[in-house]
Image (cartoon, helix red, strand yellow):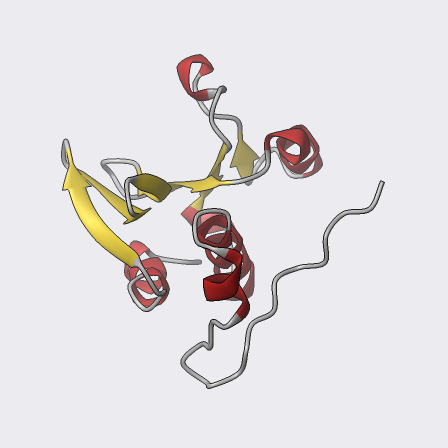
Amino acid sequence: MVTIDEVRGLASTLPRAYEVLVHDRVKFRVGRIVFLAFSRDETIMGFGFPKDERAALVAGEPDKFSLPSTSDMRYHWVHARLSALDHAEMEELVLDAWRMCVPKGVAAGYRGGDGRVRPAPPAASG
């Protein structure tokens, strides 16, 4: 099970990312773009995710992932229950959401706390 503090620990180390509190909800931004947001009770994590892939993600694991509200369907966004995520999966989701918001050069050069470069996932072909 992942906690908001674990997510915060990773997100706060990402270049150009910063935490804000908006209407009692923790959010992480790059510039003005929100790439992570939490429900008020901190059990649900919303994160940036490609629109064209989100239906498959939700359909594959509906107990873990859900679509955003109808009003938020215009955004690149998905929700996940924190209690259903493991640490490695959370790290991948957070990093991918962050990569959607920063310049490619910033994302390509990111080094995690262990010093390893974390390459972006391969681009989808097709």
